Length: 527
Image 1: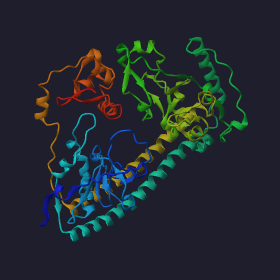
Image 2 (image 1 turned 135 degrees about the horizontal axis):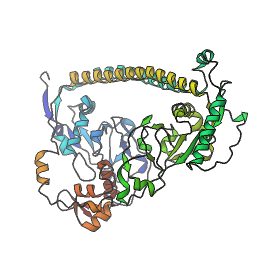
Image 3 (image 1 turned 90 degrees about the horizontal axis):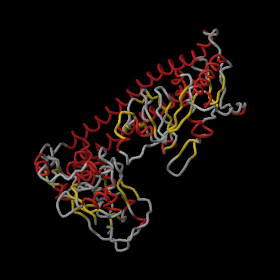
Image 4 (image 1 turned 180 degrees about the vertical axis):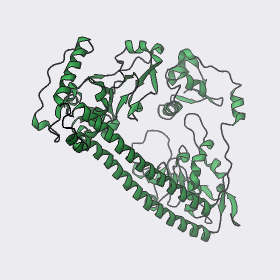
């Protein structure tokens, strides 16, 4: 890059190790992920032990050993001068020849920090140690050139933030538009003109009779028990006005509401079948075709997990997410659900799309009056939810509402795609400015998953035993002795979720202190 010299990062950074003689829980800092800066850490009680804390100074470069590749790095701000962190969040004095922000933008440009994941080492909790980043090459122009370039970057970032603010405002307005479409739909506003042109349409009374007829058939076929009479809806219960050709109906009167369950995790015959088992983590779409977990028919028959017919309404009834939204979806395949979901099986199957839209249109009402809020987990008030007054138009108007909402949502999707495209282009432009101003040192990072290492691992004795799967890590090590990390993972409760395995392993190593790295590299054993 021009005639700039290239130096090792280690020549500019010196790790600061000033021990705090009087550690203060009120003066701890933490490094946020995604390059969001440094902040004061919430006060927590220190555990009895020998954790050392070190004094950090403003202007030092600081990063999180476990999360550098997730954007946990920055420059200690003036307001946190004198705060503390452990050795897991090391800080570095910067040579006078280098501006602190020059180091910061070195890691930020082109999202270079993301590539550092290949440097992370360790079993359980992987870390990037100072010696590893010290070997990185970095351009070092004169201090004045650095300041000039940083000023140009600040100007570019200011423009970027202005555009991001505008795009965020557009996104918020689009979210409001989507909500207003649903709210207008269940108030009859979207089909006002349609009703004028279709005044001879079948009345709501006919639909009510069809629903009652289907309900009786459910009872006759012993799909449901004879329900208790529902209380008549009083005028004061109406949450809003609806057209005179519509009627209010209790939610429970238009469909059968049931819950779900979980087959025993200890019985392998209940799991890995071909029946989707839906939990809140699957409820990210309006229509469900598959799930992360599957059970067998034997699992259905030996648990409270009901077999749900296609076209039912799946409703998240217990989750932390209920503070913000109530996920509702239609299953496009037969499935089961876990105990955190409720299912509404409409007596008239082709009402399902309108019911989904109607419940989403009433989401603000549901969140306000029909959710019981806990510390972290919230749940629907089931007995009240099933008595929810629900606006019911004639079946033909329901179809028209669904059609209009779909068309309007397509327009919203196009707007959202445009916003996302502008955001992506804005990010690319900023990164191109970074690359142009800062240059690219073309650092070659050592990949810890190289063929050479894999070949070495392949020579070890494989101790994996499929008969001992789905067990606790401590119990596995107790019964089998030291195990290679890969074997322990495959035999654990998390054979298909490596992230969950490492999270549990980290907990056992660092918090519970029940497991430690063995004498032989890559192996784990009990403390």
